[in-house]
Image (cartoon, rainbow, N blue to C red; front, top):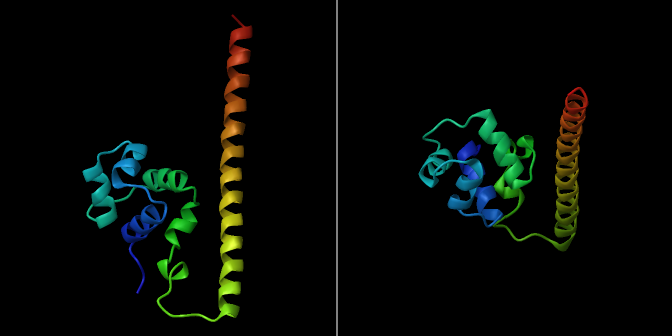
Length: 125
């Protein structure tokens, strides 16, 4: 059974130990409004999903494809499986850092463009 996006967002928020209040504050909405996103009673815009990706330090794709079973399993696993699982988590964490670096590089590029624009504007005054 595929998880709904609101359930995925709630699971990620809880894994990050973020409260609904904190997450809502970061999104610029009320806690009640945020709660409706998690419950799926209000539509989630792409803009809010992108903001959540920044808050959770994940890519939008990772939020959409999130599966709680990947992180927690009720079955007992062998040590061999745990090693493989640990390697998968390492790759996931590495991917998360790569996503964060890409986002920061994009933001830095935009900041550089704005700085150049204002320097040019000031030099013509």
